[in-house]
Structures are given as C-alpha cells and as structure tokens.
Image (cartoon, rainbow, N blue to C red; front, side):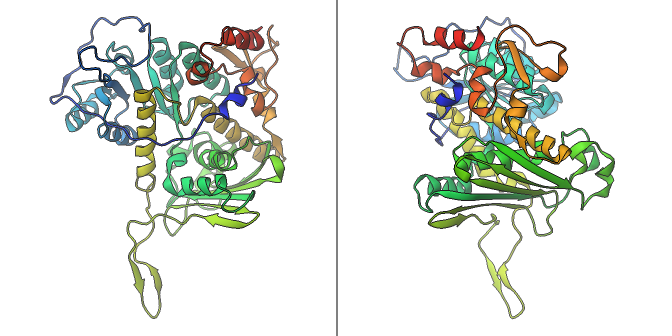
Length: 453
C-alpha cells in the first residue's frame, strides 16, 4: 500500500472562512501550558449545540502573514486569538488592526498556547520545519507557507510528525486556488479540450530581486519555478516521471558569480508525464510589460489558455494603439491576493468541518522534489528521473530521516522509495487518510508494519 494510492482520492475543494475577533489588544502574558489535547475533534457546545469556533494563532506578521490574517478575520467558525512576530511592534499593530486579543514576539508562545487549535506559519523558510514539528508535538493543526523545508529529509520528518500526531497539515501553494488556473483544471477534468497533450506555464517577474535575495535563496528552480512545476502536476493530474532543465543569465549579470542555479535569472524546464504528456515551463526574473503569469493546455479536441490579470478592464483605442489602458499587476500579492485568501478559507473550512485538506504535505514534498530534480538536471545537463531524488532519502523511523549522501552507511530497516508513486515508503498516512479507514480494524498497524519493518 502506498500513500499515493490514497492521495489520489483527495478531492480539490475551495471553501469559505471567517473569524470574529475580540476587541482590544494586550501584551501576551505567558501562562502554564497544558499537554496536547486528547482529542483534536472540534467540540460541540453543550448549551447551544453549535460548534465552538476554531481558535487560531498566526506566526509572522509580514506581508503574507497579514494577508492570511485578514482572510481568517472574515469568515465564520474561526477566530484568531494570538499573533507573533520577532519585531513585536509588528505583532502589536496586527493585533490592533484585526482585533486579536494577544500578541507576542515568541512563536513558541503561539504554538504552546493551550487555547490555540491551529497555527498559520508565515515565518521565514528556515524556521518552517522546526515550527511544524513543534505544532505537531503540541497537538495543533498547521497551515504552512511553502516550503516545508529546503532539506528533503527534514521535509519528510515534518510531514510525518503531523501525520503521526493526527493533526492536519496544509501547504500554501496558492496558485492552485487562482480562479484562472482553476478554470483550466476544470476544462481538463470535464474533457472540454479532450485529453491533454501539452501543458505550458510561464512566470516572469516585473523586475529582478536584489542580489541579497538571490544569494542563498536556493536558486531559480527552488524559489521561483517550483510554483510552475507544481502547477503542471496539478493540471496533469498525474505524477511526473523525469525532467530536463536549463538556465542562463540575461538580466542581472551581478548574480553570475553565485553558485549553481542562483546564477540563473532565466530558466526552462520540460517535464514528462504518463501517456506521453509533456509540460513546458519558462521563468524569467524580468519582463518589461508587467507580471506575466499564464497557462495553456493543448488537448486532443481543443486548447484552453489564461491571460494575465489586469487592475481593470479598460482599453484604449487610438490610431497608433489599441489595448489595455494599464499594465498587468506588477506584484505577486496583487496578482494572487484572491488566491491567498481562498487557500486560507479552504483550510479554515477543513478545520471547521473536519474535511480533507486540499493541498497536503505530500503536495509540498513533491513540489520540492521537482525543483531539486530541475536543479540537478541543469547542473548535469541531462534528463533526471524524479526517482533519483526520492531514493536518496531514508528514514530509520518516520521522524528520523537522512540523505544517503550525508551518511557513510545504509541503516537497518527499509529501502528508500524509488519514485514519486512510492512516497508511501517514507511518508505515513495523514489524519484524513486514517479517518477514511476508521472502523476497519488494524489498518494503521498493517501500514506501519509494511513501511517501517
């Protein structure tokens, strides 16, 4: 039994969320914290028969954290009760703006707050894995912005920590919730253009980021193309097999001294999927005409494509020009604001209704595998099978994983997964998959025995 056989049963859904908040903000006072609750199910009010609101904490009050907090604050059934940020004044301002009763500079005070049911992790990437594990240890459901971790083994550990603790984990791959890409997905599912033949996506930023952002950022495949690679998998509805990637530098010559794919500001990928379907991705850190984000699918009986998103629909007609009056959105938060809100709402509904998470830890893991494979392909100038990346991970237990390259000996136990379709060898079933098997005896015992014996 592999995890991926279960993942395919997960339905994609969007949902509406909300939050009603307390009025005044006060400094967060640490209290004695209780151990993780025995049951993570949402409790019903004995007096009214209504569901108690899901109480939420948000870690990180930067741009993304504020977007998520604003979305949480607009839907029924969820209530933010504490926010944190290392610069405590940002946490205080967010608390005052959204009526959150508590704020703090310490993320652990959010995670260990006995009143908190779920935590939104919107902190810098290097803190994600440890904070996810801490949430799992404290019995908190987790929404985490991508990536789970930049290290593959640590990514698996964080996912398994949540799955073993029985808490939900959703990863923020916001483009899956964009209405334009969702319409393309619907066209594929409804066979409006027949069976897919070619999938294309492009991502081109309005201007390149500063040198300091690119340095140490993991390269163009990890910090930029990963969204497009995930989108090809989302649209294909299949697991990819191999990838060919190339990169170059055309815009910002100052980055050419950086290692690996950090020296690229332009890259192209071809991804092979089952049934002869190919996906093509191009990314560039600069486009002179605004934020260029498009997708196209050629099918056996037609084609569907998206256009860029503009601030308005106004057009100018002159004898020397006909077209949009203004440029496309020039900032990712403007372009994908609705998608960020919708993904937040989707996780809130999952919490309120105890329904399946629409973007799982495994989705985040596969996106990372795809970006690592792309990086390897560009470095070695060849096709790379995704199995080459997956098979480097071994785990002596669900939460103790390493990369073969970092070890001198192969541990006792199981062999690493040989491909994306065998991720179940290193990732244990999540809380929603376990729930599907309730009442069927020793299902988890059988799965665990097969994976970890």
